[in-house]
Length: 257
Image: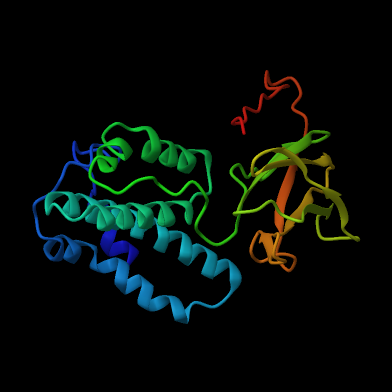
């Protein structure tokens, strides 16, 4: 299925750009929807997916493709001069699918596009009922926007997470141990602002570190990263300090919260 759509996923916006303008499209939605038939085909396979990690990856792609499809549907609704309530509903669906797939700083930039691009949110708002919902509407999510798999020996690797929910979580913990051996140590994440929390792994040791993150939502749900934890965890391999190669120091740039 992925081989068939490689390089041929329909572009939902104009200007041959993924962040082009949501120009109204007079093409009937039924005709446009046929281009996205692969989304329904993938969704039909979802019940057969086994394993937390596999299901998480499946849902990522489903939400990503549904997001593209929903953008195209918004354009068709604008072209058909649909009622303001219908357009608002479709725009809300688009947000829902996007926030269901956000997992990196680049994906967060897509949220900024939806809210600030003059050819997106403001254009749609002119044809939709107001106001937009200000609260997150989807299921709770744990997002780790930057995942590193290596660190220099002695480096104290910082971790930043985003807890996407309507209310603050009861708690968020980082569990870690030397890779493959020993008991897990635990440390609480510290709140930064809104849904952003930070913690840090201990100085990197030669044997490497494995870790997982556990968040308890306000209503008692458990969110795990990675989804396969604690059976399969995130690992960080140690890089020995370089010597005489002109690469003795490395700089890590992190996105702001």
